Each structure stands twice: as structure tokens, then as C-alpha cells.
Length: 317
Image 1 (cartoon, rainbow, N blue to C red):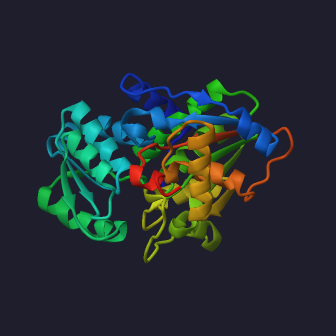
Image 2: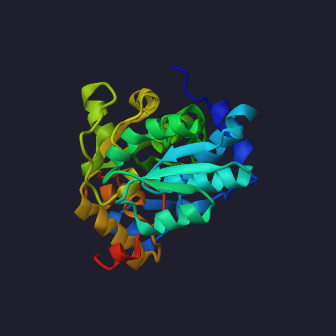
Image 3: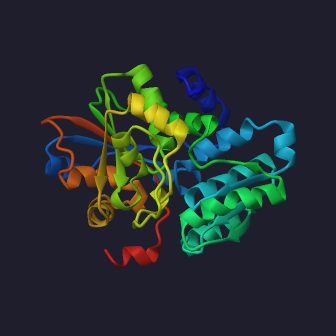
């Protein structure tokens, strides 16, 4: 199984950097005082389409062959990958079809359509939407852009780690949200190649914990159902390629529940004035809940992986 190398991630950065943002690192004195250590927030909430997903989607699309591009692209997603593929396809001048479950957030459906994609709503959950994608793909003969289990998608996601290592020195821990594992695999690949002493910690939602279970069982796991407020992480299975990378390079995977995720979203909104979606806040949830207790004076980087949050959710915090 061929996995992305550091050179592949650097090449991905060269390919996509003129199209996307190098996102900022932010700090909060309130957070540092609360946790008793120094924390840096990597704000992918300010990325194109509002999440890190565009890094991988665009890198994949830019590496398609002319014949693959001519067929247009198709993807399945609850929202962030949907928007990323739609925007990337529009940027590259390609047609895009996105399959989304009917429970996807309306704001994410609207944004995906706004980037010019055809949206097909199917199934009541991501599990059903993922099951349908092969049928629709075959009918349309489009090129599939996997949301996480793909060489170029992982390499693109890994570009965020290159930025982090340039922006922050003497890092002890990096916290990364994990669903199917694309972001975590990309970050771990770059970090362990450049600074292997840094601990890379994945944080999953309890209701979509396929990668956490995969690490326990020793193989990529498929879930029968997913149920979490963190819709950005609500995928039905861990990737085979992502698992191969993560099982080798990631130091630890933790799980947080929906209440802990809500508290992290609320803290970021109230104390940091940042709007972060639940799937983008699991890393902070692990710290605030005490699921991970850093050493005194530790220097942590927390990737806030997306900011596409339903305003109705904020009203419930």
C-alpha cells in the first residue's frame, strides 16, 4: 500500500498554495490559564469553504488525468468535503455531482450548490449515502473523489502540518479531529517525518469512532450506524489507507462525547470569539474534558478543522 511521503506532501503544497489560504495560529490567554499550559489554535475555520477539506480535494482534482477531468467528478459527504469538491471542481473548470444524505445541514447543502455542483440527496444518514455512491457513480461515469481514503487527499491534508511546524516552535502535542482519518493521516505523515518527537493525538466523536475502534481491533472498522453532533466526522468506516498510516504513526486516539464537544464549541465561541463546528472542536474537547492531561508547561497545537456550523446548533449551547 503506497502512502504519501514528505515529498508528496510538499509537492501537494506547491500545487495548491496559490489557490488556498495559509491559515493563522491564534492564542487564548483564558485557555492557557484554564489548562495550565500553552495552546495554539490552528484556525482552518478561515480556510476556503470553511474547512481543511479543500486542501485534499483540490490536490486530488489537480492531479487527475485529462480523461478523468473530462468525465467530471463525484463525491459523497455530509457537507465539508461536499463544499470542498464543489469549489475545487469549479476552480479547475470541472463539473461536479455531490451525493449528500437528507440529514445534511441545509447551510452546507446550499453552500455546495452555490459552488456550482449538482446535489443529489439520498438516504437518511451518511451510511446510506455512502452505500449509494457507487451506483450513482457508475450511472454518471464520473471520477470519484474520496473524502479521506485517497493518496492525494491525504497528502493535501498534510500540508496543514507544514504550516504548523513553520508557525510554532517547540511543539509537544498536536490534536487532530478524526473521522475517516484523512486529516490525521496527513498531519502524522508530515510531523513524524520532520519532528518525530511531537506527539500526534487523534480525537474522535464517540458516536462515529471507527478509527478509534480500528486501532483497538488492528484493522479498519466499518460502523453499522453513526450518531454524533459532529457531522463533519460522521463517516461510516475508517479508511484502509488512512488506517495503515495512522496505526504506524499516530501516538494515541481518544474519544469525546457530544456534551464534551458542545462545551468546547461553547468555550471557543464565548472566550475566543471563534465559530467552530463540532467536528472541528474535538481536539479542544479532549483537553477541556480532561481526557488528555498535558504536562505542565506543555505546548499544544489544536487544529480547529472547520467552521461550517448550523446556527440552530449554536442556539442550543
